[in-house]
Image (tube, rainbow, N blue to C red; front, side):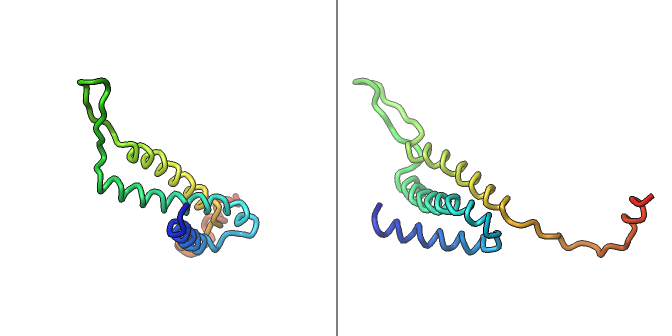
Length: 117
């Protein structure tokens, strides 16, 4: 891996860590490898997007002397698989966050009254 890509991955890792700073200590240890993988995937997905934008989503191939065709480019196939994995990792990380109480109407005691009977 070149230095530029390593710098981009480290910057992305720091960005993700800031987003998940509220994780408990135990969860942070679990999340560390997820964050490493997520950062790598973000940078790789950006590179794949750039390649797809330059070269297109379709590539031509030759199968035999006179048989030509088109197919999804290898970059598109890798991108599609990696984006699914990235989304799964981000969901895992999000699930590790502590549950915050949603702001809603103040408790008026009605539920307690109803359930106490």
